[in-house]
Image (tube, rainbow, N blue to C red; front, side):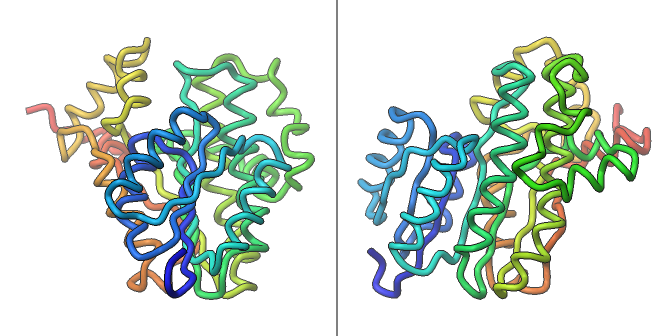
Length: 277
């Protein structure tokens, strides 16, 4: 346990989660959470060997009781000053139903559980996706995605599996909902003196990103990256740097917003000014 009782919680231990844990966990009690026991154990062993104080907690973010257990374990360890939620599945990895439960419901459950746990002055950062920025909906649906009680969220008719044609559509809709629910939750978190924001990464060099690049939309994704101002894939460290800013003392006036960290992909696509020279 850290000397000052500071707790940092990182959920999802893929490339981004590990980079964030290393960047933010020094000098804190670092709670690592993942649904996969082997992934969790390997991450804990690796990070603990580097001198971090680590507590593991196997967590299924789509299960309310599992999320509640993570929140209780975290607060029992001290002041939960930072929560970073990176857990998710992508279109090539999962079905429509799994994407809605993990990427959408999981985010909503985590927002709810830690709204009652985060310390005064604390901060949460939730990983969404640039796919959500491309997937904006009509105002009525956006309001319902943002504010429908979590227990009723998957009952929205637009989220019925038969209403969603493919995993890519489910992913875009879930990630747009993530952006919207974080915005709405910032008001609730603010009552505790805490902040919460989302980050929408572009194409990041992680195992999940590699799987998508090898999938049916890989060529289009490469074209977007090649036409972007940055002309490269993002790295987990790019995301960790953005998380560090949003969770840290230089962003105390930033809450309820989404930060695109995409190398300019969205800008080039939406303006039609991709650099193809």
